[in-house]
Image 1 (cartoon, rainbow, N blue to C red):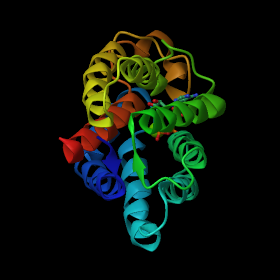
Image 2: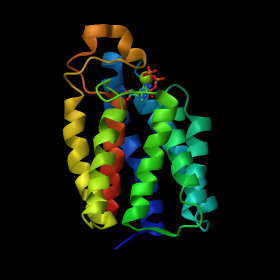
Image 3: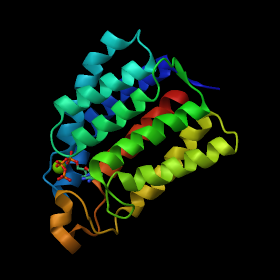
Image 4: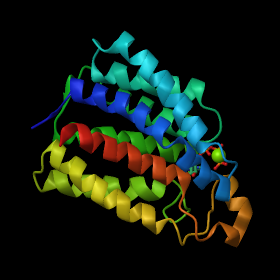
Length: 209
Ligand SMILES: Nc1ncnc2c1ncn2[C@@H]1O[C@H](COP(=O)(O)OP(=O)(O)OP(=O)(O)O)[C@@H](O)[C@H]1O
Ligand SMILES: [Mg+2]
């Protein structure tokens, strides 16, 4: 069982809707430990992605993801634009010519995307960033592929892992980005970027399930 290109386009399209719907929520989270722009950033970025998608819908997944990455990079400022932008650009580069994602391709997608986040942000687990969600999600997918799970099964597992990891960002003290300036005052708040990453994974599961 694979994830089709049509499902992935619907995912990206739906993600724009989710970011619009959760704009205030994400911005409130960022107001507590950042500069109150994360919802605005994600909504702006994905609404541009939604606009761009029809122009590349007939292309391969590599081209589609690279376009998503470049669009996020050019339309979103701050930390999250380059981070999510690099995620999709790196993931796209590794999936050139693909028309669907089998289990191994889903691993390639996440592995290369997360590699992009690391290359850009140099975060470690426990720094209270989106990487706190992506690190265990990637580990889970690796294990799932070894266990012979399908791409939709991997996606379902990823949501469970992400939700737990997201909750795990609450007691952490931020070590990266603007939130780190708050020192111990960043403790007790859920990380905005980890939240948007979890929302993206949930949106993916929604189109597959
Ligand atoms: N070095 C990093 N590596 C990974 N993720 C990061 C890093 N720095 C920030 N983030 C993520 O970006 C989110 C903030 O994104 P936002 O859209 O608000 O951009 P920003 O206001 O420029 O960010 P910041 O104030 O954190 O520099 C954080 O919640 C965190 O998850
Ligand atoms: Mg911010």
